[in-house]
Length: 213
Figure: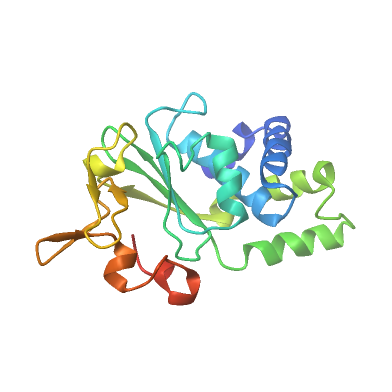
C-alpha cells in the first residue's frame, strides 16, 4: 500500500476530531499535536488495527513532550496501564508494537519536516493554532516525507507487560517497596536504584533520566 493511498485513508474529519481530543488532553494546540496525531493514525493503518484502543498494542515513545501526549490521546495507551512506555531519548519518534508477537513499526519525524510545513502555513497566511485551517496542511504533507518508517521487534519481559506486578521487594536501604523487577541486587541485597546511586530521589539534576531504563 502506497503512502499516498494511506494519506487518503486518513480522512480529514477524523484527523481534526482526534486533534481536538488531543488538544483537550494536552492542554493546548501545538506542532507536536499535529504530528503525533498523524503519526498514530498512520501507525494504525500500517498495523491494520481496526480501531483504537487495541488491548494488544504497546507504544514506546522516545520523548517526554507534546508528541507523546498526542499519541496517548489517539491510541488510548497509558503509562499507568503499562501500554505506554517512555524512553526519553529526545527524539520525535515512537514504536507501535503488537504485544503477542513483539512485531511493530517505528515512526520518526524526518529532519526539517516542520520547517517545510511551517513555510507552507506562512505562505498561505494560516496560523498554527487555527486547527481547521492548519490541519489540512499538516495532513497533506506526504507521509513518506513526514516520517521515516521501519519494522521493529521488541520483546517485552514479564515485568514489562500489563497486569498485576510479577514481583515486589523491599529496598534493603530505604525500606520502600520496589515492583516489577526494578530493583538491583548488590552484594546479595535488593536496592532501589536511587539508593544504589546514593540519592534521595531521582531527578534531572542528577542525570538519572539520561540512561536507558
